[in-house]
Length: 181
View: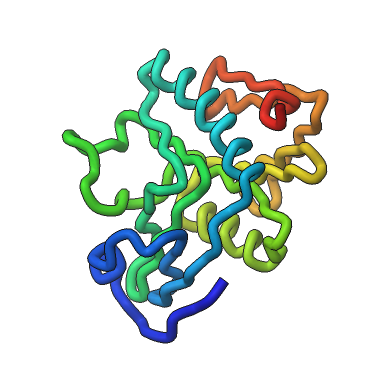
């Protein structure tokens, strides 16, 4: 991961176009390497399960890592989780042509082998401070999912468990093992 030393706004960041994996963290452009193949299909497995459920219940929208969320201003922060869910009542008519204003209700981050714990913790903190209801951190190495509702309210779902989110996605269930198939 490399940081470009120039403070910029979210509008300037958006105007850069497709520059590849990146984020805007407190006004600083952070370039990232593409993720590995396993990371992509694990995120896709979660996105498919969430997407089918959310669409069938008309609960909102699920997006992939390409979608940016504008979560802080002056200096601006725009992050893009690996998978995101936004409740229907928060989606403006016609969608959002720029970065989504505010956090998703659910941000899913899939760990990569080279992720530093300080960077992962910063993402979790940013998402929760911005107002995410839940942050899921998916660990391919341990085949587990940590569900953060706050920095102190954390539940761990192991391979034999069934991931649920009754307060956010009533009726949703996903066997953790299926995430890693």
